[in-house]
Amino acid sequence: MRGHGTYVDEEKLVASVAGAVERVNKLVCVTPLKTRYNGEVGDIVVGRITEVQQKRWKVETNSRLDSVLLLSSMNLPGGELRRRSAEDELAMRDYLQEGDLISAEVQSVFSDGAVSLHTRSLKYGKLGQGVLVQVSPSLVKRQKTHFHDLPCGASVILGNNGFIWIYPTPEQKDEEAGGFTTNLEPVPLSDREVISRLRNCVVALVTQKLMLFDTSILYCYEASLPHQIKDILKPEVMEEIVLETRQKLLDLEG
Amino acid sequence: MASVVLSDAEKLYIIHGVQEDLRVDGRGCEDYRCAEVETDVVSNTSGSARVKLGHTDILVGVKAEMGTPKLEKPDEGYLEFFVDCSANATPEFEGRGGEELGTEIASTLYRIFSSEGSVDLKSLCINPGEHCWVLYVDVLLLECGGNLFDAISITVKAALFNTRIPKVRVLEDEEGSKEIELSDDPYDCIRLNVEDVPCIVTLNKIGYRHVVDATLQEEACSLASLLIAITSKGALTCMKKIGKGSLDPESIFEMMETGKKVGKSLHASLQKVLDEEESLGTTRQKVGFLG
Picture: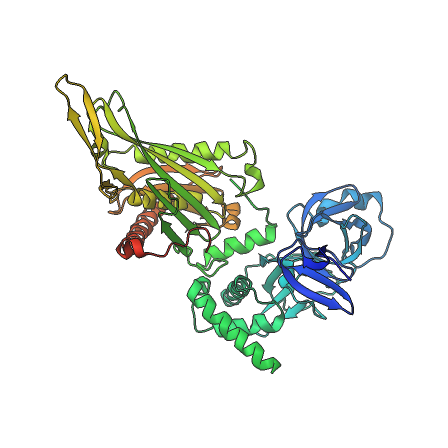
């Protein structure tokens, strides 16, 4: 039986996109390597606000249509549970402006493919200081959790839509804030070095088409330590580091 | 210019990073990204070059044609620049969107090359007052990843280095009419001396410091930039300020000094790469657009 990404040509099943074949019982689908993000319920995404509309925000998530974040799906600061009033509507821009980055979860998918997001948990919300890397969604591995506090000293959010957010690990978890108060203090130099190195490692892994998950990023970070941060992006060094990472991952499996 | 939207926290992170001389990708304030230079990529031009500086991709083709010299300079040839910002680079350039940027870049290039001694225009003369070589330099923007002016000037220099102008002889008949004869050997050509061709170095002011070779994100954090044209010997030929912010005169001096230092090393490494490529000769494996 033919699934997405295939077509029948003279009684033969042919792939219409370049990608990996997935077989579920008798269903054959081809998932493309380079594609826009297709939302699925429960995915974690990192998005950028593009518009502030009447009762919702439009969020850019590298998909075919802009995603939607309804005001009612947003956590109010202080964690209160109440009806959204007209004052809340007028104060929308105080919470999220155009250009802000948020982490959210996919609540539902509309019939045209547009995704509806929600931030109804204290771990989601507006993102503060850090670095964003945009990669192809097919390179982010599906895992149980996408929020990782790496032992090297920084944290990373692997959005299913291909937006990778690398940021300094916050000291204490602010439970009450719910992610609305941005820490605007300068980030110390040691944390910056870790973040820059992680960013270059992610770019190196993506250039060599390796799947992104916490273990691969960590191995790549360790393999890159002998080199200077800015040298990681040189083609020769990139190949060497990713080769070492690939070897370590194979040893881990085998 | 293509721009990205950034959140305030991201901009703050970048500005603080520049203050401590550690940019987002680990570079210092005076480091350039990895650049790939390849010449002779387009077969039907007299000279061509392609430069990839991070995400910025520029292609330049030079065509040499015969024309009449300008009235005020009858014994010199001249250069004509045309910049095409293709919609490939960003959707903003679709239709006539890229025209404004294209004319701005072209006028900057005209200004830089109008200074005496950048290119030996007298070598382009065939018959004073009647015939001369006109070099049409076409710049094509394939991808926009920040720092356009630097990448374009590097590519133009590499393309001019690669340009081969056929040798011509002028024969005079008994009646006095002149005939132009092209030499039979297709490899018999004159090369341009690009030693004094300047390269542009853009210095963007971010916070209290300035950076060289800014990415799109860093350009979004900078309010004012200084564009200087430096020759390989470190001489400054042209200066232009862009951006809506203001620059302090002391910081302009600092930026000029940094620009001269960076420009000299840029020229040195570019010349090394061009000479290396030249030494490989015709057996060189061309990557072109397939790599």
